[in-house]
Image (cartoon, rainbow, N blue to C red):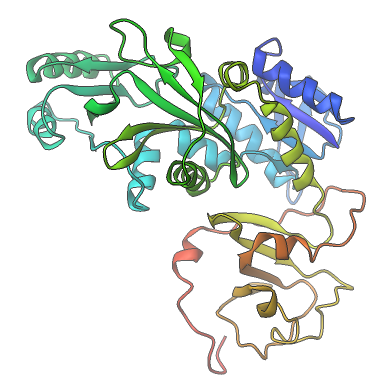
Length: 407
């Protein structure tokens, strides 16, 4: 596998460890400065240049996009995706997680436990908002803060009002969040790779500091997460569209309360704490994903452990051509066809008797391992014409039935 690590800090611990882990496994790997790319666009031919030279072919990309370059960094990642190169985290997933308000909005809709949160703009709305989250003390957060920066504890409503007014005068967007008293000074970081938690630690703040981030002097200890916390961490990463993520949770009286999902989680604290080869787990996962070739099998959204929504492309020469959907025996492998894409047609819930043709794409839900088992032996990966990204709204509109003769 030829792997590109996108990072502006080649000497940072996480970047060095990921490069080292890839080299130890015999992969070719380069650290590429995210800001040194040029994005070229032409009809049917998205391309990239790096330091004024045409970028050579890569099998996979591992983005390490800093908060300060989110816009340009995600544009580069998106270009790799359009060139049909596997990205450990997509531009969409990075964007979702980078904005604290956006990520909490998405998680709230999916019934994930989060501290009660409010976002206001008008000064008159501040005090009512504080009361709605349970009153002081409250946590005040900058929407795009990292490593505990921009996270403040207001002990009184008056103090909270003053802090918010000051931050808003500086054109800062802030969240007001319920203070989870039972978890004061500690939180849990779960490191998610694919559909499993590969490591977890509890971070404990020191002295009068309420923020438990290791960067702020917090002490970390390895822990074995119970199933509820593991499932929550994996589900959050999947909902936001991330394959590699750090999920930060508070241990509330009603179970896990998710604070934040990080698309570029640091490795130093959790590797030192757990003594696990987390960088190796990330590289192994990417290598396994790269081994999906000719049938274009790409996970779009995983909704529970071991199951997912996946697109299967039927190329010329596929054994499925000429078979009806029922004759493919996908259902016997616990794979259900949700939607058939044929040229410009979108056919929700296609009939079992529909005959498959070359170029068809099937959006399926089922066991990921069963779908992976359909893939032939790996062949040389080539840049192929771009397959248009599915609009996630299609997943909400799959109820229309193809029970009659209409398309």
